[in-house]
Image (cartoon, rainbow, N blue to C red; front, side, top):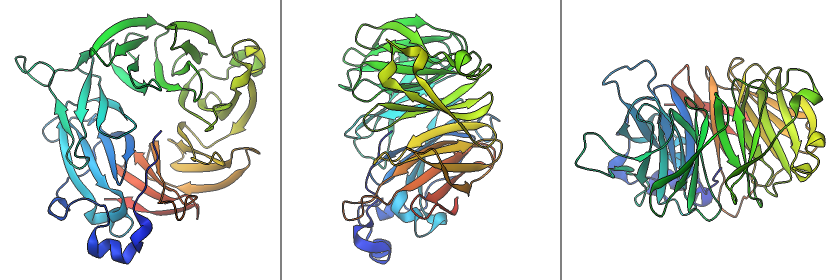
Length: 368
């Protein structure tokens, strides 16, 4: 998860008048609506919303919608910058640390598409083979969805829902290194900070797999069954504390937030699951505030977002969202106010994005 300034230094009034790092004026209000949004990523003052268009409406394409975050704090109707056409049924996107390149899961094409973000307001799909029809990307497994970059950004890890394997991609050569078979239904992949371990969740089996990115081999699987029978048969989003010592996993059987002590892995993996916290219905996306103080989780079926104290796991607030909230991303202000975060939540069923104030624990409004 990336966090980035949203340009609050100028103040909202000055921001409205002068831009203050927001999208260029000529781009304002040029975009369209969202369509089955499945992911959101923050890059500076811009946010990218991935629209899968599962109902194949309009031109039957997907899209990346570019959102001006500072503008959204002022006027929700005038903060969609543009829509960049993609194939339908896209999955997640991950971007590099300097925000100049993105990698987008193309589920229908079984590829990862490269996205040029050198101008953050005008993402462009990079065609790796212009001689072929359509935008060509890096071939991976069947139905890629989740992605994560290695700490040195030389390797990309991709979960393939259809083939049940993890693709390892060399970004220097832009070629597939290997497909590591795991299990059908794998969903998200997230690399634990300060470690060589990637964690892979699974929608259909009792497993969260731990994969060593240094040796490219399977390490272990978390033992949910020994903690509580049936736990972990449908795991979704995953996030870590900033120091990487604690993991938080959304589980739908039962609806809960699983808390993992990563220091127990792999030697004492049987002791790694340390808590099971109640959530709303259908927990999906998980995010930890940059200071590590809070954990936020979307609840797809109860249409809300829970905020927890990361240490005590106490529920701090339940905040309303749209219909079918799934992914979420945090945008942090400039250094003058480092603890004030705003949260963007994609609503898959209502085809919009909720904007939340993390400090006030309040719903601001829906975009657009």
